[in-house]
Image (cartoon, rainbow, N blue to C red):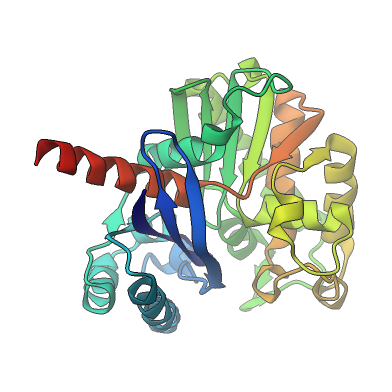
Length: 323
C-alpha cells in the first residue's frame, strides 16, 4: 500500500483525500476525506479572473490541508485544478500560492484529463457487478463545467462542457449581484437552454444514448441523493451507490426551483455553500436524464479524487519498479 494525498480544486469546492492505495488490486483505504466550499470560480464567467477574496478562501483551505497531509505522512501529493483555473487570466497567482503552501505545483488539467480521472474514480469499484449494464455514462456536474464520459473498462469517449451549477447560477439567476429569491420561470428557462446547447456539443463527440448505466458524481448529485433519502445530516456512506429514480430527480428539482432561499437552506442535509446553486445543478442532472432517457442514476461519492489517488499510487509503484 502506498500512502498518497490527492487534492481536487474545482469552481465551487476544494477537496482532499489522503488514502492508502494498492495500485495492483485497486484497493483504496480512506484515511481522511474532506471538502471545503471556497467558490474559487466566483465571478470568473463574467470577469475572466480569480477574485482576490476567492483566492484567499482557497489558500486558507490549502493551509488546513497541508497540516492534514503532514499529520498522515503521505508519500506523494498531487494537486489538480479544474474549470475555474483553466478559464482565469490570473491563474499564475493561484499556482504560486498553492506551491508556497503545499510545496507542489497545481496541475491545471484539461477537460479530457478531468473526465479520465472521474471515470476511473467512479467505476473502478463497479467492476464485476452483474446488476449494472455497460457501457457506463459518468457525468461529473461541477461548479463551472460538466464532464461526460462513456466507457466500460476504459474510457471510450469524453467531453467537458461549460455548464455547471455556479456558472449557470451566476450567468442567469443573478441580478445586481444577488441571486433571485426565488428565480423566475424565465430565468430557469435560460439555464435549461444553455444546458441543452451544451448537451448538443457533448453528444457530437460522446455517444450519450448508447450508455446503459448512468453514474452521477459531485455535490449537486450527492445532495439530491441526500434529500431523496431524507437524511437529517449528510451521510456519505448512505449516499454512496444509492439510486435516484427519474421521478425523484424531477420532483426534487421542481421543488428546488420554486423554493425561496430560506426553504432550501432549511433542508437538513444541505451544505450552506450549495443553497444558491443547487437548483441549477439539479436542472443539469434532470436535463441529462431527459436527453438519454435514463430511468435512474447511480450516485457515487468516489470520483476525480479517487481517480487521482489511483494514478499517484500507480506512478509511485512504477518508479519503484524502475528503481
